[in-house]
Image (cartoon, rainbow, N blue to C red; front, side, top):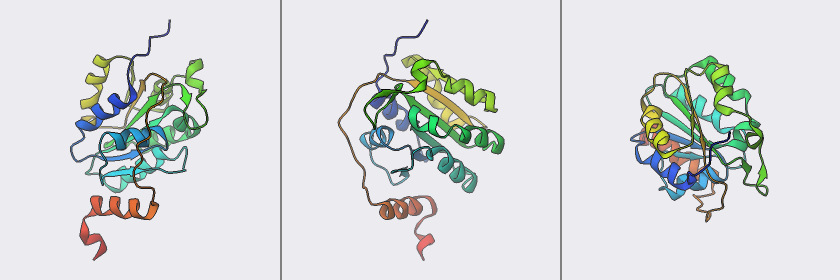
Amino acid sequence: MKNEITLDRREVVAQILKQRGDTLVVTGLGSTCWDATAAGDDPRNFYVWGAMGGATMIGLGLALAQPTRRVLVITGDGEILMGLGSLATVAVQHPANLSIVVIDNERYGETGMQDTHTRSGVDLAGIAEAAGFPYSARVHTGQELQTLIPSLYTNDGPTFAAVKVMARSYPTVLPARDGTYLKNRFREAVLGKKAFE
């Protein structure tokens, strides 16, 4: 029997980011980018524009390059389905500081809300677990979300969570769309002004 989906994606992302501290955040394109921006634009957010399937690999590269910093990827089910191989690569690389949260509304929000494979039962958390993630969670309730959030910032080893959210539309909240500006802003947030001197 399928669990009833009751979580609101905007509230979920806001709750997750409220506890981020100094964590570096990479968003997938589309809705998760807008959700993170709606929660409060931050120079430590790297918004992925037009690179569907790439958020997890960008997060992995960042986690490997900055092993003393926590890195959180927030992406959608359509985006992670396009880059499933990235989960195997993350598991093999085993970065202690990387967490991946999939905001799963079971829809391709950018192209018309068509069903994704998760609507037909594809278990993203099960795939991450089978790939070798030491921590993998399925989140359906507010209580499960509250239990998950601290682990995103403290687990020693890559963490994966698929958070089921209602399929609904929200007002678009766009960050800056200038890729050079976003890259430079993020680089400065990570490395400091000395990186440009």
